[in-house]
Length: 179
Image (cartoon, rainbow, N blue to C red):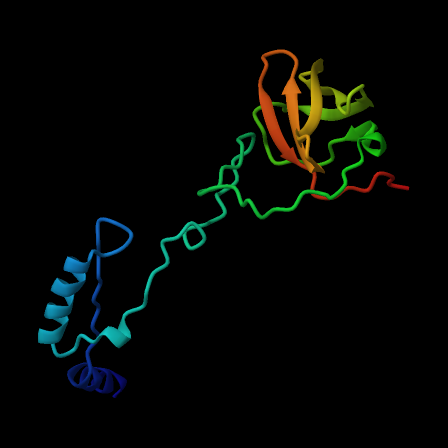
């Protein structure tokens, strides 16, 4: 009995799929005109049923699958609206910070990762980072400065002493004391 109803419904109704595809993320005016001509001549096609797809950076954003030991790479550009901590206090940031959890990074891996910041002269911090890999201690030295002399937020530049590479970091918030 149920099978007969399904067969009857299939005779009375049908499903239509239609796509508007393009090689670019937006259709050209000529393509829109050509597609509209086709839609006008096919009785079951109507513009009100089409759903617009978002191909912007925001629309195409996704969280990549985590891979152990590999950096997390997101599609698109870094969000310029991320706010760093206002009035970042380098003096209060001094001391040892223990890396409890982290996204994987190429610059440093292993266990027991610690960062010791000491105040240098001329508004910078000296940074000594240590890590342990296969029971071998590794150490890197760096200098930390504000990203801009006019900006005292937590936008920082870390200049590695060996290799001469620079990394931009944002301190978004911090508790200078954890007690």
